Length: 298
Image (cartoon, rainbow, N blue to C red; front, side, top):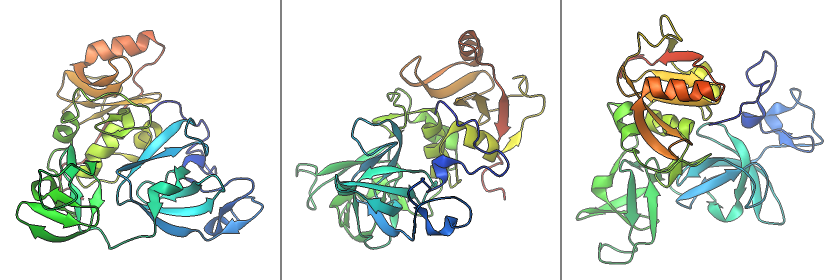
């Protein structure tokens, strides 16, 4: 994802993207750490729509910072009269505004997650019925029973083959990211309807059982280990993360980069030398290479 907060990550500075604090309101656990007119405990809500835009301001035309997926938990600290909730996502800590219509009191704990790039929800136990909604990779559902080839949930019936247990782990996050090849670029997005560079990395790593922050600068600080000789690309391996200021890509192999990018307006694989040259011409040089531990490593 693009522009970074220059103060984020500095010693003693709380990152506003993941700190539920404003001048007029802050989370109770931040009392003594931030200055605010009042502090509140917040209350738990669950995302009940297929995906819920999290925006920078309480307006439908406000910038999209990220998306919350069905089944995610949110701590809400304020609901305004226009139907917007200000809160923090449990999964990655991002703070922003969501439509109150996208949230409800938490239901049964999720038992499964969507493992297909996209799946359909039918109102009954038949695929001949008109679908009710479409769910994206990573959405979480509470399955009550299996009826033939469909799993019954509170939302409707979902193909059981498109679901996995919550502890299901994909063995290769690069292959997961590759399933998004050709999907459109969308700043702040994290589904097959559109996603950005860091959203692609986050969704793929989450599917492989790894925690991952939302934005590229956060990922650069938090993920893996520095590659020897970086930023020289001579030691690049499949799965290495390549970072520029405000951008991240995944090494598909030693010579190709997989990334969601605004040049192609899609998730694309291209020779890494071409990506490096093009981004350098726009004023950005590779600044870090990070290598993740092998799957299953502590």
